[in-house]
Image (tube, rainbow, N blue to C red; front, side, top):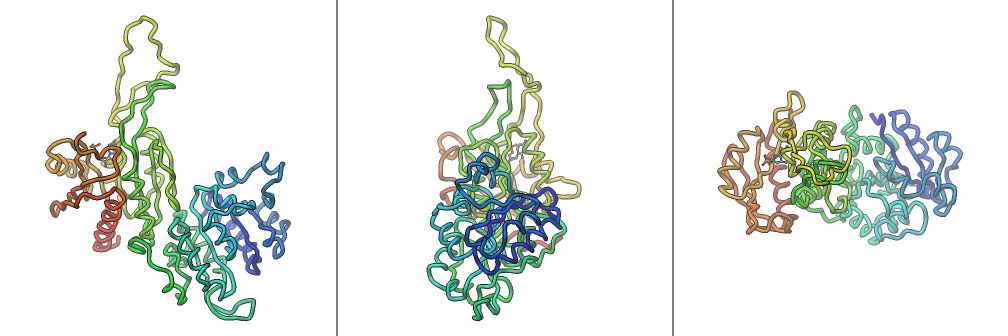
Length: 435
Ligand code: C5P
């Protein structure tokens, strides 16, 4: 269900807009909250009054509305949401979003958001099949946008074919899948993450070229940690390490491209949020530990973060001063070992748990021992000695250490390593008995 979840619903202009009102009602029934952005064209089909009554919130229509910008501007609207849903997604809205055009509240919000986006297209069959719309669909998929529908059937314009908006219950199920909501009808949104039409599969599926590793992880939840942690000493100083987060972010993108729902728990990094991924930002190891626990259950958990082993036992409330006194001693305390804890989780151990080992010598020997110690299934080991240039760099050479033996991948970019690893993990998962 959607308790505590917030959906930003963008309603485009099409006859299917009337179904958006039903979607607002279903979200409310599931315990979720909806804020609505209604395009000018959308307002021709459904009134702001209806939507405000169903959502219990003011409906947003204008980009340059002074009161709205004070109350809740377009940035704030998407910031407050867990997911942005566009239903109906008209050909015009898809074209704007695919090309970064921002000339009204809906399109500006779509360009400004860093939240996952789900589109439910609705348009005339020939508009849907037009190469321009198909190009835009492919671009949006590559940008990480998820799709539900369109369905095939009779259309309001009297024609038949793919172009009917998915039914509100199907969109609700797709929302549940993307947000990992418990107790929502799973199978309903099958094919959603692949961006493919709802059943029966419409011929249009063949027109769209497959994405990298598409579908290998469809229906799976992948949990990834990335980046360093910052352990505060006082309000202005902290202990950190040189992890850039690049490998973990690349893994999140590759898992997303393989159709998974991805939760990325990230320490402080200067990387853009990967599209279509649920990003949870944390600072300390203890916050990362809590965020990982909250994201369970998962089918695959990849611990790529360089978590600080120690924190300062007691963070100073004020900035430490060097006013001629003795150097303050830093008392350290051990941080939780997130990987080891999840690998031995009493009731929610993910079926496949992967750790990373950054070693500067005897890489395979040390990493094999680490796999046993941590209790994970696979350790991805890499050489981070300064000579390797891996830390902060764009290339990586990794060894996969499992109970069955060691595999060494050729040196590749971190993005290529990520794709290869995700393929490997998907194959391992597929070979395991479902629990
Ligand atoms: O012990 P070490 O830091 O070398 O182990 C590396 C692996 O363990 C990585 O997968 C890292 O993300 C994970 N780890 C963790 N929590 C810690 C320390 C490491 O999840 N406190």
